[in-house]
Length: 254
Image (cartoon, rainbow, N blue to C red; front, top):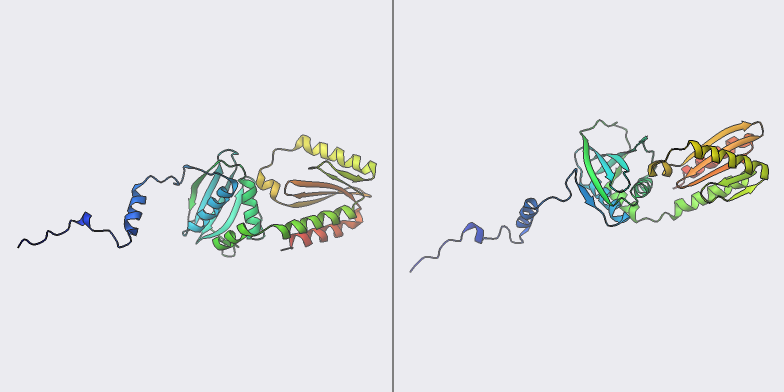
């Protein structure tokens, strides 16, 4: 009787479920998502998903630049242990309050990206021990959460500021209200801004800010930026503290 011939190694499955074989095939295949290469994204949602996924895959501290092919926008993320630690644009670090702010910032910045390129710009970057960070899971949850609460707070702020002012001008819609003389002054100021304005990046446009500029004893210029919306208002200099209080209330809203 002839003994059965032993099976060759290639005749034996790598594992019962073939997972190691799949892993080897992936390793042998070309890596389309490698650092320094362009990764096509079919939609804005896919671009955001790719960035948040990158955060979830980084364990060792890294500073990573993300660039949009079609718009040229680039941001740098400091990531460690699946946490986003800092987010910086062309003008420096972007101040964000929570995971929802992070997601809104990234979504706005990478609208119409077309393709993304990820590059490691620094390994083991120095980070403050007190630095706040946003875990991957929180960013994922924020991606699914509606922005209705923040939108409601913004609408409330706009109504309150308009009610306090004797005139206002919306630079996005060109709508205005109030005393004709003050509206004319706001329009002149808006035209002056347009002449000296450089094109802002999406990160700059998204970052909310309030500026109070005393023009005279009776005219306080209130300049409010809320994402793509920008308002110029004519207020009473004596109401400066009230404007600041309304703004702080908006910034602290969930």
